[in-house]
Length: 280
Image (cartoon, rainbow, N blue to C red; front, side):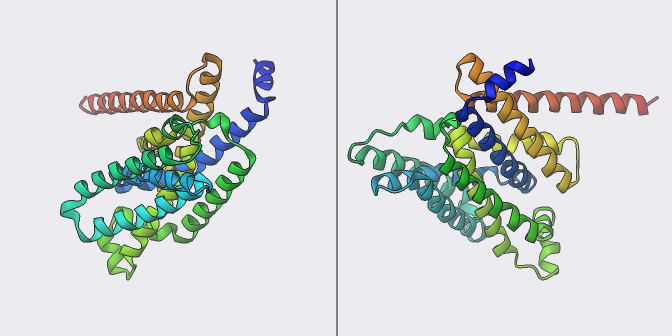
């Protein structure tokens, strides 16, 4: 068993993929906990799918696609933050429109790129086995920025997630903090794109945190457990997909989804048994 694992890890592209999974798991565990608690999965999905437009434009201009992804993600975070704060009655429609237009722009600009040879499927469904050292450095910098902001604004983010009115009474700038939180989600989306792609990014962003939320009500513990679960899902998915010759991102998400359903079922059965015991 140990020899097979060591043989598996001897390849450089596997080592890169494992490290990318680690970086992605840290961001997903920390930021995904905010997404689950705040219940802003739909907004996060809008940010994720808008990113393809930025990547397509970057390709067309001959720039690094992830740079375009960062710009598009931050732009959509600001825009959706303003929509949520100023026009809640039209929020779903605007998110859906931005979602669709962003993806359409990405497809069009990639098709218009001279000598176009990019694999669109790798962006839509991810290709963690193709992560290179420059990409790893970028992911590390994004991870560091996310953790630094969370460390500075941990208490403020916690307040606006659990009780916005109390945050306002304490004099916090709730609107600015909310937009800043969306920007962190945007950066996390960019990291996860290299792991599971645009289509599956929301699953890895929310499922580990959702599982963790079933077992703890502490935000700090939830973040740590979600990061650990995300790492388990990414690494186990990587091993399974490599051995069965399946898409890594899809296997990771299936692993996370099955684990969530299992945890939810176990939690409900446990609560039912506790109620039955207390009735005697």
